[in-house]
Image (cartoon, rainbow, N blue to C red; front, side, top):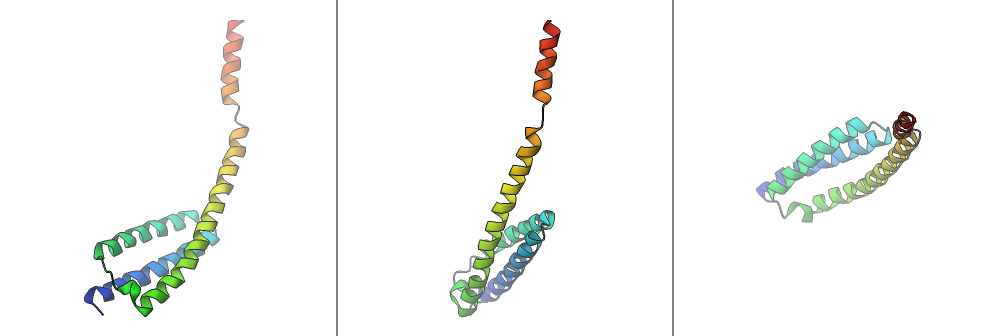
Length: 113
């Protein structure tokens, strides 16, 4: 095992933990915490890229850990898309009752008379 493999293993374990926590908070609809964890995971990803380790993900432990992360990522992606669609629909419903542009036009119409 290379010296950077130990660092990579530690970072990948943190990445896994953050991924599971992201899933847990997204499931609870705690979006603020989800985004906070997402930012932490993005920072961790930058650290992994900076480490530039090319061997850990090929080890048995690395393959096992990545195979545990991938299905959770798929679930997170599906849940996040679902949340986004719900929020867009909710926003569209709220905006459909917004009549302020029409009120402004009616005021202009009334002034001309």
